[in-house]
Length: 253
Image (tube, rainbow, N blue to C red; front, side):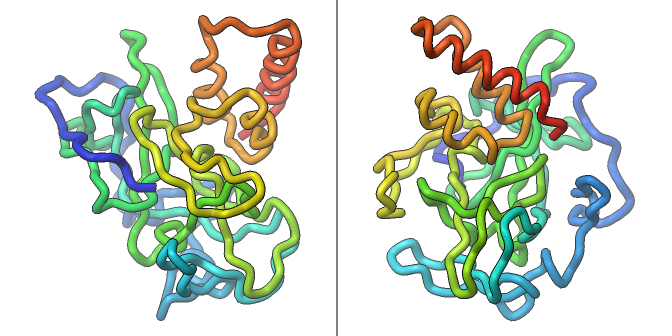
């Protein structure tokens, strides 16, 4: 999803000790997850299609990605690749994750940027790493739905949440991909579960988060639980949060 304007870099010294070593390989090959490296047939759009999805018109949403053939539940659909950058938790400042230098934060010209990591500096300040997908990555055209059929495992891998029919549009719930508290979007999914307006994962109600918990990577679950700190919860809600926390600790990814 695109990040709302204006989010521009400020004259802030970069945080220390949170960056990765620059790899000599192209950026798209750096996004390795569970031994699954970048696979061009699956992850690279050529003439608007991969071996599993195609880009096509998706009504008033513009373009979307559609299954070329049936995809079984829990099947890998694609892995994301693109340009990574680091943003502070409030979305005020952005940094290059390799050099640590300040950069301009992406705006609406950078669609479908997703949060791929959350980490804390030695001083206790929280930062999020983001991935701005390359134009030839299916993530660029992945639309939102409040009743999604695709979810994320770890930072970069997208899997089917259920059996998907050939020709069906693939969608994810953007709130499980977004950690910028300033971001919001008017929803046009028209599903029975439509929330009308969506925001970052921190804006989900407890019931909504429970329904989506299994499609969130562990670091996103942590971001959500951290957003509940200091809030008053009923006894039943506290029990639910305890169960969600247990599931998070059991989640290896």
